[in-house]
Image (cartoon, rainbow, N blue to C red; front, side, top):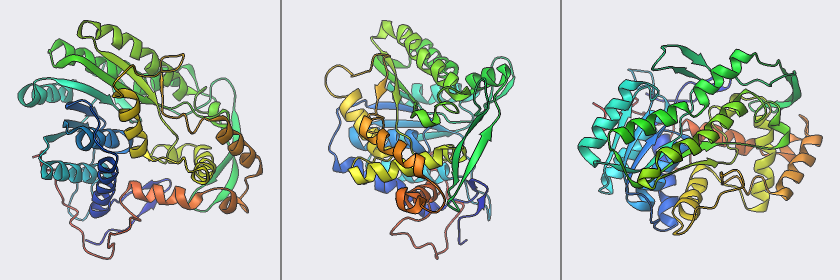
Amino acid sequence: MIIEPRMRGFICTTSHPEGCAQNVKNQIDYIKSKGAIDGAKKVLVIGASTGFGLSSRITSAFGSNASTIGVFFEKPPAEGKPASPGWYNSAAFEKEAHKAGLYAKSINGDAFSDEIKKQTMDLIKADLGQVDLVIYSLASPVRMHPKTGVLHRSVLKPIGEKFSNKTVDFHTGKVSEVSIEPCSDEDIENTIAVMGGEDWAMWIDALKQADLLAPEVKTVAYSYIGPSVTEAVYRKGTIGRAKDNLEATAFEISDTLKSLNGQAFVSVNKALVTQASSAIPVIPLYISLLYKTMKEEGTHEGTIEQMQRLFAEKLYNGSEIPVDEKGLIRIDDLEMSADVQAQVAKLWEKAETDNLDQIGDLTGYRKDFYNLFGFDFDGVDYSKESDEMLQIPSIK
């Protein structure tokens, strides 16, 4: 079938197999161009199909020749209905990894569930023996708690008082005022249950009990802090409470891993266009101004540049891993530099519908958004028929 982008609100409901494959190839080429990383050789990536998780898997495989197992929850294709982009990304990744002689297998299912944890552990035991790096990069709006059976839904809301600020509809470029009502206590608890550190700790506990973690194992989860302009709705809102919980969990996991000389870290990453961030009020406008500023400075990075730097300069730099006063790895350092933030704040004051094309990078934002779904890549003929039924080699 010929596949075109179809939008529903902030979500694209179609994805393109060849475009997704091009995205994966571009990232692999970037990693190869940067040279080898003396990193982990057996890697489990939880949340491996898009964004930072996919880029972590690519960096491990093509930077360090690692064997990788990827866990994700994607919608497979049906006749006339394309799969979700993470499905096609993973199919392309496995194909390229196998071509390069690398081990790569994937598991599609709910990573929060005991069943998928067991399936993953059985696969590690059978094929790899142990893993020496566990990346935790889950982004889900809901979590069925495996012990209580309660379905938790995360929300993005401020705490205490109503939040009002500017936002932009990135399709039309219209800048408007947005208001978000404050959350309830229950909202906070639910958001922590979905996006906090409990499931990360459950994974590590289960892997350790089954003796599937190698000596000196590392585990890394991803977080975001961001600027003062998004603070009330993000870092000081419900999501921020969940991120606080995730960051505190790293210390608990490090204690768990002491007997293996292992360590747990949280890496604070840069603001980027993702399926999730597109739906967060304020964030698209901030990212559009940030992109413009960082591209002019020559410091703009996508997920693959971020992960290459995380692995090469932080996790596997041959000496101690640099962290801030809170024990966090900061790969958002270029975004949060004083000059970048001062310039973004200045542009924020000026931003309106009429001037956003000049002072912001809406074009870059839109391109990144369509790229998430495999659209708008150079070198892909979108007028050609695509096989939407493309399968992932290791998933039968």
